[in-house]
Image (tube, rainbow, N blue to C red):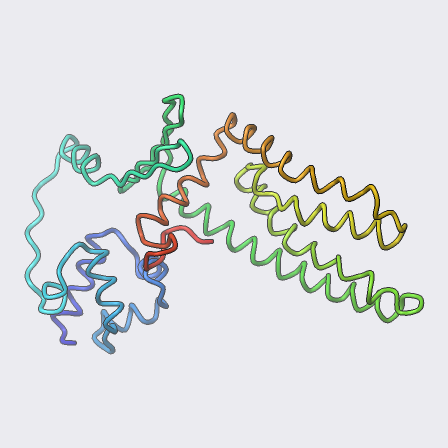
Amino acid sequence: MNQKTADRLVELRKNAGYSQEELADTIGVSRQAVSKWERCESSPDTDNLIELARLYKVSLDELINGTDLPPKAPRTEETEQVAADTDAFVWEDDGITVAIKEKEVSVKNEDGEEKTYDAEHLRKKDLKEKRVNTTVSSLTALLVVVAYLLLGFLGPNGKGWTCGWPLFLVIPVSSSIVSFVFYRRIALLNYPCIVVGIYCFVGMFYGIWHPTWVMFISIPVFYIIAEKIDRMTRTRDYAAIKNAYGKKEGKIPGHKGKDGFNR
């Protein structure tokens, strides 16, 4: 790859409004890799070239051969709005219509009520949730392992080894609690793991396996009620927005690439 192509990669990235880190997250490489491409120290492989061309909406020939970019026309407030509306990506998810524009995301529910979100705020919120979730899950996993080992070694007659394993259900539950706190969406709670944990605890320590199995019937009931509450409080918006970004950037199964949101 020559310097002209490297310079073009820089220009295309800036025109698309990506930082090096954001571009790296979008196409699934490290920021250092993007930096090396733009300094002409290394070249993207074929898959990355195809992904970059798709992302920047140019042909591979234009991307590799460094065809000059068309000059930018001066844009007034009116033309900015027209361009934003024209470039909007629209996705329907469970009755919710999401329109992704350059700087904002609008969400319209089944009743026609529309709400607008700042795209940069959504990205920062999602990245923060991912960092917090990773930290909480890691610490929880460490504490659970320690607790399980203590139960196993110190429990009477080795009962801790056989009865302590439900502690590991705390890990996915803690992760779901973090997501619930960030997005205020009840349906994000890992209710099945909570039910399994309670059922195993009561059964192993008190021998009450029946009729506590009836608790499992509450799982579909919980999610039916949770979805209705989330629908009323508009907290489903974030889930729909994530799915829309996934479809837009190809992270939905059957497509390639990564979205601006993290999972």
